[in-house]
Image 1 (spheres, helix red, strand yellow):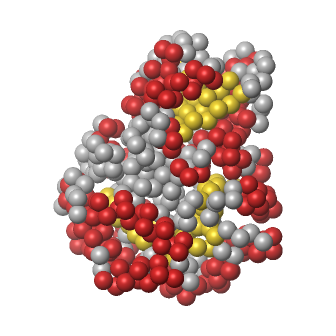
Image 2 (cartoon, rainbow, N blue to C red):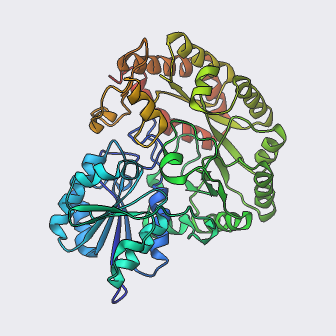
Image 3 (cartoon, rainbow, N blue to C red):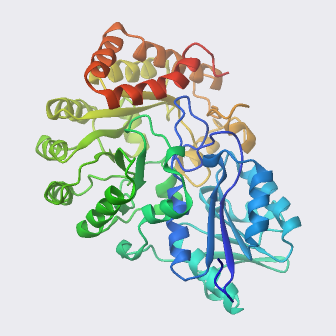
Length: 488
């Protein structure tokens, strides 16, 4: 039942394509049926809920709901403020959903958050006169303050991080400082418990179902293509206290009996190895049973990996990107190719699986260099791998660079995806068209996954590990459809 005399806020991950994973760094429909938790919106929902206003969060792609189902539930809820997440490939759709809802709720206010709205503020306002606000960058507290401002009838001029429409003019309030004390935020798992169904979300590198959470935000390395760091989380690293994280892990273990794993979706969970070891020791001391996955940089000591393995680390997700030093340098990764081989050796010694992400089409890259990346991928032997053309998004330096060099082939946001929602290629290189880059990625996946040695390895792995077998089968059922079907 709604609290009397409080406004109602609808947080909306809008309907779009079936299984459209808006919450991942490269939003789209994936070949492996990946569906990320909408964790940025979930954290913001928690911040709004902490004010005591009426709040409902709908993740339409996660639920498989179309616009009609969303409208029906919104009518029952009667929102005063509707906040929609945005991404580059879905922006036109998101605006269309906003306009439809405005017809049904003419007195409601409408806001947008997320990567695309942050990167293209003025343009996004120009898409619809019904858009009242954009909460830029890290938007948890901006959404919270906007809800309270509307409830109190105050003007939004003092809300940091907010851009808003005042008549024919767009006003940009000062930037909001990044959240320093992340322990203040509500456990995102509590938001999942109240609003989401954990069975809707799948990560092929993680045991299913998992619970995704952040133990920190921000990354200092500023890789030129990294969407979240440049548009939301920023370059300053902020970490939750170890005790705060361990309390949430205990809550998850006690509250979600079907959960099989945690996924730490920090930009770099291992950025502070001492803290990582302390976290692992705390997991073991408190009896945290669930296995877990995390993102890491390809530079991690064997000693830390061994402690992580003892504490239940199942696998790590690593952005290797390329096997060419000049491309690594151009991306600003501040790593060496030899770091990749050492990392892989350490992971194999520690018994930790790792997923490798590989990109082709980087600055100055030619076909010979692309083959170097594929050869490296097969040599370091990740448990799973993905190969895709460089995806560039507004708000990132790589987008600006490709545009300036004339290598961006379209600025039509609809073209960021194929008709069935797969990632499209919207760049070219000095010697490869977008179609050729995609064909090379298709070829790389076949070379990697159809090697007899790899097929034997996965069969042997599944023979002795029932959970791993179920995870692999679920991902493979979708993935196999794309192995021989060209993307373009």
